[in-house]
Image 1 (cartoon, rainbow over the protein chains, first blue to last red):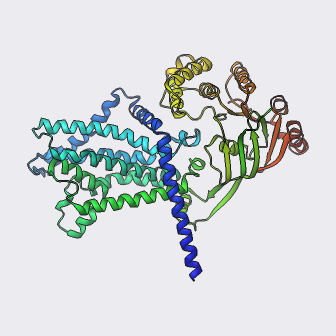
Image 2 (tube, rainbow over the protein chains, first blue to last red; image 1 turned 60 degrees about the horizontal axis):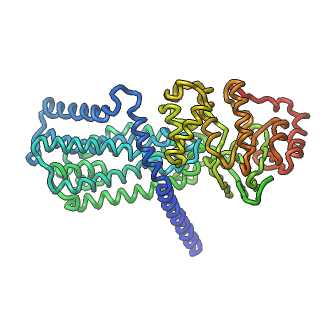
Image 3 (cartoon, helix red, strand yellow; image 1 turned 30 degrees about the vertical axis):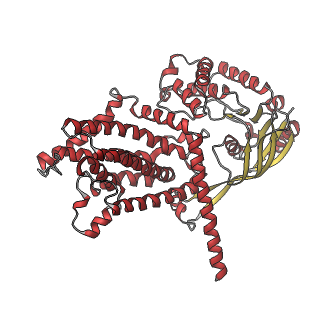
Length: 287
Length: 257
């Protein structure tokens, strides 16, 4: 009995050590390939918008159409569009949906990174962990361009930049870190299982409507449900961007939301290291 | 030939592939050790050392584990057990048509590969020029690679791999590089690289003539195991001996696509 517990503890210590080594290994790969990561992020943008006449304009057109559709449905159709905190519904919509464009890209494309770049896994010696990073970085560039457009829209509507905008880099940074780790987890899983990739893409619409993007998560009356919803990182970021643009709140004011997000982030990080450690040596065999 | 510096070392290297009943089982296998799977050894307990400047012929039937061994040398496949040590820049002339981004042009793919290898801007420009000259595919070099024929891809692929000043060159003799004229051009290039001092060559072959003229050492693989390691003529005798009597068809291999 005692021996068994001792063995268990020993095994646990051993796996902790191995996973810690995996973390260090991933960091080392990123440091060694930092220039390549930046270059491949540029190449990824080029690859995404290559081959269409309008090119990078699609990065603006697609979100604009989506925003128009929701604005139309809520303002004209449902007549549910009320001003929020003194801001027109349109601006409230834009502030919450802009991070979603990055998040939905990362949910779908971010989980297909290794399939998209399978030649970097199976044909060329290349650190697999950095593939998620440069894809995420390429999506981030597009996102930053969109954020600049959003800030310009707010200024045009007569709402100048204020002190709350200082926390915008915090949300952008956290979102980048979160979804890069997501991609590190989902990329290998999708490479191994098509079902996983399909599950993710079929859930994107569900995630959109179940997260606080088209509604305010803080207006949910049921206290338990409210707290549960705050564990959803998509809600955290949509609300966060609105904290900056609309609600004028600091990110540390809602401590429960912050705590819930960090908990999910840590959990996902642990899971991604666990799967990456398991699959790193096998991915090239199955892709 | 050969110095004392070690170029490649295999220490008790085994490679096993996990075969699951389906992809679903493979997925579940990540999270549970109870999911059943079979293990197939591609390589079993390989032990050998190759010194810098040696040229080694690798022989074996299809499925003997040659490709897996070479992939471990090039670093895209990891050993399941043991350790593979490789010192020096490896260039592999194996799957020439692979490793490209189909959305990019030939020229961009050369630059991309140069970036991945961490070359400087000037080095990339130099590589680009050499590849364009050698591949000689005209206007197509500035077209997306998805529009290429397999012959064109192979030309670009060969040109890239041959012009990065490899320290370790891995060549598959049954290389498909298109027409006869280009094939001869490639042969000349490979020999030119091989003749350079201190370039280690791994040459996968079925034909004794080519092996004997290029290599001085031979490895023979059988069912994933190293069954012979020695002089190239002895290796050929060892490999071809039983083959002639039992299976005359082993000689046939496809060289052109």
